[in-house]
Length: 164
Image (cartoon, rainbow, N blue to C red):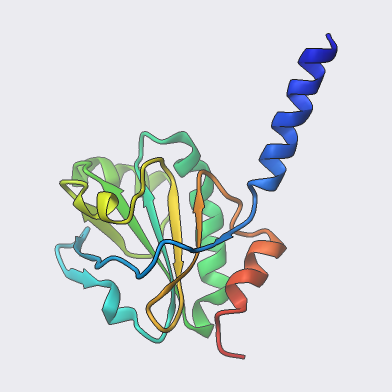
C-alpha cells in the first residue's frame, strides 16, 4: 500500500513539474517551410519579429486535443502583442483535420507535415511537442507533452519574449 501511494505521489509531482516550459538547449531552430491547410506556403522565417509557438500535433493524439483550446486562448490574449501559433499536423488527411477543426475551433495556421520530415528535423519524437521561437528566430523554450498554455507561469515565460 505504501509503495502504491509513493508511486502515485511521485507521478503527481512529476506531472506538476512537467507543467512548465524548459529553456531550449538544442541549438538553432530548424527550418520550417510547409503548406497550410489552404495550400498556402508558410515559412517560420516569415514570422521573424514575432514570438511563435510551433506545436507538433495530430488529431488522434488525446493530449494534443486536450491542449488545443488553451493554445487558442493564449494566442487570443497575446496575439495583439506579436504572438503566433503554428500548429504542425503530422501526416493526416486534410479532411480529418478539417473535421477536427469543426469540433475544436483553431483560429491559427495549421501546417501540414505530410512526410513528418519537419517533426524529425525538430526532434518532435512524442506528441504534442512544442517550441517557442523568439522574435530573433531562435528557439527559447520547449515542452514535450500536454501543457495548459493558459497557466500564469507559462504565459509569463512567453511574455518575457514579447516587447513591452
